[in-house]
Image (cartoon, rainbow, N blue to C red; front, side, top):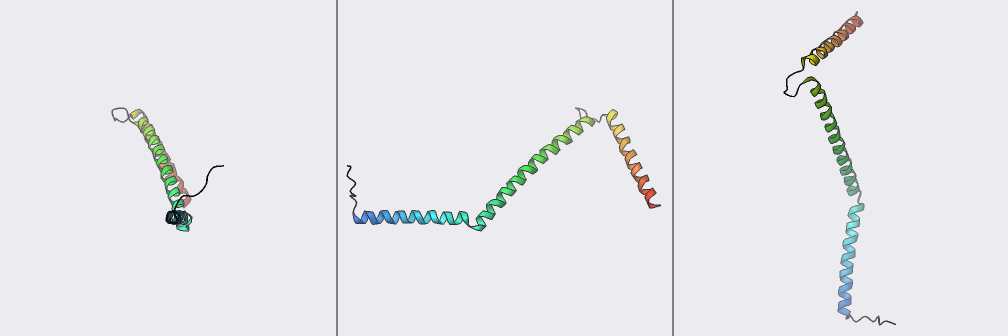
Length: 109
């Protein structure tokens, strides 16, 4: 059998116990902070904000890409408008606005 006798002095044992108590108290304080309702709410808020920021960032990139694709349909590489596409689109918009104006005028009568 191996010799398991403790060769520390009583003062060393007391110092070791004091160190372990301090470490345990620090651990308990950390646990107390982690499970405190304000900490839990703060962590939840941070997760929601991070998720919202991520979602908004992805939405911004998607909208920016869509706008760039639409713009590419109406503007050439040099930045000049493509009249063969701008004019029909403009006429379509004017027609829709005119139809909407006629529809609201008929409802008023």
